[in-house]
Amino acid sequence: MRAPTGPAGARIVSLGHYQPARVVTNEELSRRVDTSDEWIRDRVGIASRRIAEPEESLADMAVAAGDKALAASGLGPSDIDLVIVATCTAISSLPNTAGQVAARLGMDAPGAFDLNTACSGFAYGLANANHAILAGAATNALVIGVEKLSDWVDWDDRSTCIIFADGAGAAVVSASDEPGIGPVVWGSDGEKGPAIRIETRDGKIIQEGQAVFRWATTALAPIALEACRRAGVDPTELAAFVPHQANIRIIDAIARKLGAPDAVVAHDIVESGNTSAASIPLALSKMVERGEVPSGAPVLLLGFGGGLTYAGQVVTCP
Amino acid sequence: MSTRDEIRTGLAEILEEIADVKPDDVADEKSFQDDLDVDSLSMVEVVVAAEERFGVKIPDDDVQNLRTVGDAVSYIEKGQA
Image (tube, rainbow over all chains, first blue to last red; front, side, top):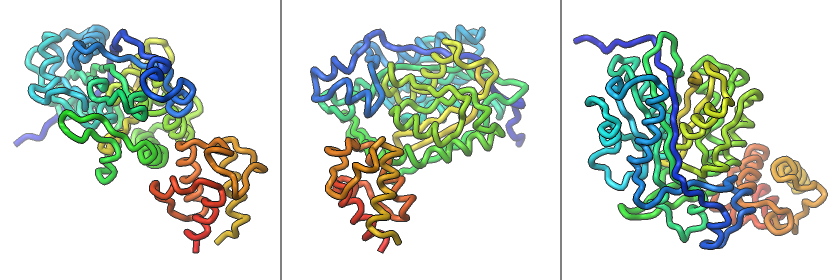
C-alpha cells in the first residue's frame, strides 16, 4: 500500500465573511433583561451584535460567507474538493451543513463534513484542511465557521443573551510551495466540559462564566506561545493576533501574556458579539478587508471554548 | 508562610495591578465588590494571581465566599498552614 503524499504546504488564499443585517444594541437588550450598556461593555466588551432573522438559516449564512471567499480566491466552485463547516448550532445534524453548502455553491462532489468543537471550530477546521492538503487528499478546501447562536440562546437569561450572536466567516485553503499554515496545537479538557453546555436537544445554552473565565485567562497563553514555537515564529514577529472573540478581558489577558508588541489584536467582539466558531474568520476577514494586516505577514489564530477545547496555529495572511 | 500583614500587602499589590485599587484603601473590613469596586471577573484574576503568589488553591466554589479583604486574608492564611 502507498502512503498519502502531497505538496510542501498549504495556505489561506482568500477570506470572506457574512453578518446578518439586524444590529441588536445593549440598550435594546436592557429593555428585555436586567442589564445595562455600561455593564456589558465593562464585563464582556460588546457594544452591539448581529442577530439573524428567524428564517435566515445557518446554511444561508455559511453560503454567503463561502461565496465571498470563493469569489476572492479566483477559483471556481468545481475547483473545491473539500468543504469543512465548523459549527455547534445546527438545528439538525442530518444532512450535514457542509454538503448543503457545497451543493448550493455549485461544487462538484467535494468531500464535505461538519465539525463541532464549538468556539475553537474554525482553528480545528483549518488544521484539518491543512492536513488533508498535505496528505494529498484535497487540493483546494473551503473552511467555514458559522453559528446561529440566537436559536439556542435563552433570551431571558441575562448572563448569556448579552454575549452570543450570529455570523459566518470562510477561508479558501490551497496547496502551495511554501507552508502558510503552521503546525496546530490542539487539545481538550473534557472534565470542565459542563461549564459551557446545551443540556437537552431543544435546550438553551448555559455558561458558568467564572469557571470559563478562569480557564481561559490561565490555560491558553501557554498554548498560544507553543503554537508560535512550533511554527518557528517569535511572538514579536506577529503582525496580528486573532483569538476567539469570547470576552474582551480574556482577549486582552491572553494578549498581554503572549508578548506580541507589534501585533494588531482582534477586537471584533465589540461590534459582533461572541459568534463561537465564526468569530476568528469573521474578525480576520474584516481586518484584512480594512488593510490592517499586510499580505504575507504571520498571524496567530487561537480558538477556545466549549468542550472545553482549544486549537491554535500561525498562518500567513492572504 | 506569610503573616496576615504580608498577605494583605501582597493582595493590595495584586488589587492595584488588576483592578486599579489604591493600596491605602485595602483593609480587612472592606468588601471587594461594594467598597473596592472589584467585579466578579476581576475577582477571578485576583484569585489566580493570589494562588501563584501565595502557593494556595482557591477553587471557584470558595471564591464567592470571599466577600471582604479579611475573608481572603484568612483563607490564604489557612491555606498556607
